[in-house]
Image 1 (tube, rainbow, N blue to C red):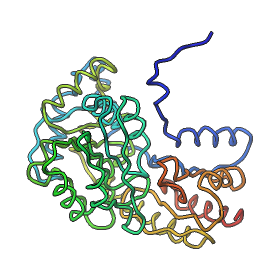
Image 2: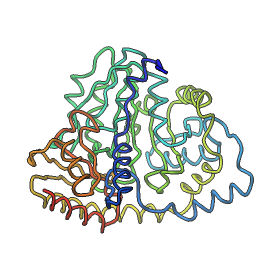
Image 3: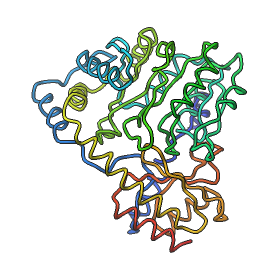
Length: 386
C-alpha cells in the first residue's frame, strides 16, 4: 500500500545518536566489540535512595493518572530548587513536568511558533531544535558556535540575524555537542541585543550542574527576562535517570497552561511513581551528583589529553556537560567519513559534527559518559586505525 503521510512528516528530523547506536548494535551482533562514545547517557546506576522512593511509591498504590502538569509536591520541589540555584523566585504554577526534558522543546515550539516565524538556534546544536522548527513550519536560523570563542556564539552575529519575523531564540549552556558555555558576560550582551524585541527565549539548561569552568548563569537572572524565558531542565543527566523519562520546564504560567493542554492531548501525564522518585532526587542527599561530577571531570582530562595526542586531532577543553568536540579537519577525512571509519575499523562509536548541523563539519563528538578504561582503549584504537 502506498501510504500518503502528512507533509509535515517530511520536515521531521532525527537524533543521529540513536542511528549510530543501531549500527553499533548490529556490529555487536556480528561479534565485534564496540566502545560506545555516541550516546549522552551516564553509565552510572541511578542512586539507591531514588530507586527506593519509586518502589515505595509503587507499593503505596501510586499507579494512577496525575495532573497533566505534574503532581503539586514535585512542582513545589522543582520551584524551590530553581529558586535556590537561579537566585530568582519561582512558584509551582510556573512548572510543567514532562516524560523527559525533550518534550519541553517539542511543546514550547509547537505552542509558540507559527508557520513562517523565525527561530534562532545554536549550530552545531542539539538536532531536535532544528527538527521541531521545521516540523511546525517555522524557519530555522542558525547562529554559529565558534571554536575560537570556546564554542560560544558571537553576540554581534546574533544581532545581524534578528528580523521582524524572529519569534524565539534558543540558547543552550552548557552545550551539547561542544561542551562550551555561555558566560555571564555573553548572556548580558545577548539580553542587551534582544531587550527591545518581544521574542521568547528557550533556555536549555539540562547540563547546568555539570559545569567545570566558571559557574552556571541563567538568563532568568537578568531583570525582565524571567517572564519571557522557558527553562528546560531534567533528571537524566545529574541523577543517571535517562530511562526513567523525567524532565520539566519552568515558564510564565500562561505558557505553562498551553503546554499542559498539549500534554493532555498527547501523553496525558508523566508517570506517577517516577514523579515521587524525582522528589527524592531533588530533596534527598546530593552526594551522588557531586560524585558523578568529579568522575566526569577525571574522564574529561583523560579524553582531552588522549584526543590531542592523535595526529590530525585538536581538542579544546570543554567547560561543561560530558562531551569532547575535537577538530579533525587535518585528518583528511570529512566528519561523516571519519565517524564511519572509526565505527567499522576501530570499533569506536562517535558522532559526526554534522549530526548537529552544518557548522559541525570538521568535528566529531565523543561522549565521555563511559568508563576511564573504555575511553583509554578508544583512544588507543583510534590511533591504530589512523
